[in-house]
Length: 305
Image 1 (cartoon, rainbow, N blue to C red):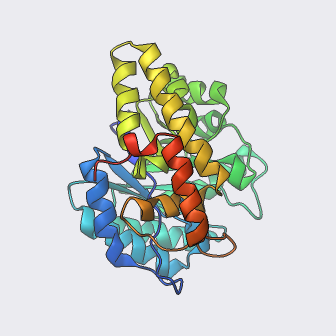
Image 2: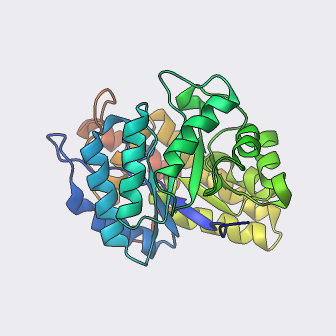
């Protein structure tokens, strides 16, 4: 394998905004410290959780630059550079390399979509070539892109086309495809698991690293899940996954990403509103959200910050 595999929890941070919708870059330092305190090993910035598709090119560059500046050598920063516009994706990738990011990742274009594996490989090869000094991860998330090309097909077809190919960020429920990614070339690629609610399933297939939004505010429960799985205590691991899923059910009830930003505010790191077309959780609804979190036991295992 050309690149070492990433291990442990990797958070997908929320992009902090002021109430007027402008970037709140000052908040990134608090986000960074919270991740480090909670044992998170890396941050995947400007992805789905970071509302990357709703940010301008300049905003995405500013967020990525600030994360790299704050993180230094204490936290690996993976910059998501996927875009519907290839020149913009290449510009983001080149910028990520220039600011000292650890790696780049890109999802498939999601308006005009690649319908065949060679088209997806051609797109990603150009993006990866714009940051030749960094590991490149394909971000497989069919629920958002509508691109259902199996990730293992992408890896097989691109390993000779993308010299800096490191692996895949796999955010999908097709565990057969995920297992195939792990086995390809005798484990030669890094397959980072991206579904927090079925992390235990990913671990059972061989995942060693995971990227998720709830690692921003609930890392301790997942650390306990990882520890239980490692020592072979499946019952304990299942119990921790169930605790996490009770919280995730609340998150989904209150809108997913907007609820996640509200939870960040509840734990003391105000990342502001979401950007339209997403609707933020109102102050009144946030009180109800807090009650649901209490019932789910969230405050017994949320972040150590």
